[in-house]
Image (cartoon, rainbow, N blue to C red):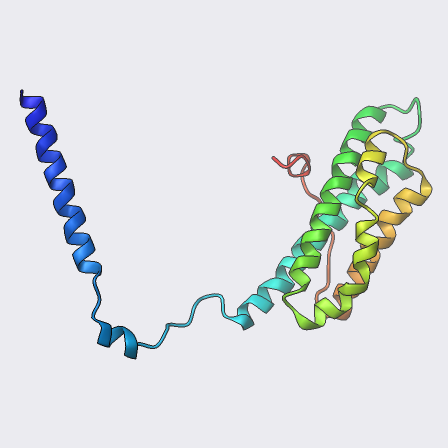
Length: 182
């Protein structure tokens, strides 16, 4: 019997607490009509500044992944049949290709928040879309000079567009756990 009494007391206390908090939330209509809305932390000017910063971060990660995990191993001959560490290099290149595509798409979306940057990056969306399936091609070992060159060309175009809009992109190499989404 004492257990049922304690449950009843807890239920009563919770009901009172709920009643008091809802009563405290009731506002007077005259105050709410005259109150001006407080400015939020995400005003349009701040969104534009953050858009440029996010663009630089995403494009930098894409550039770093491309260079570190695709271009460098390809030039070193790691993708050729019989090369030491070929399988690992191909898996990393495949992950880097998918990661690069994902970060470049995010960078394009970030660029939409800044008028100057969106104009500079708009012509690059077709080039970025062409990278969509190259990650799979790299992972399977089917990529050639033209495919690796496509990554380099798009990355360099994004860097140039960012620089022309005042958002210089520097390579930032992601870790292997970042590549795999972990």
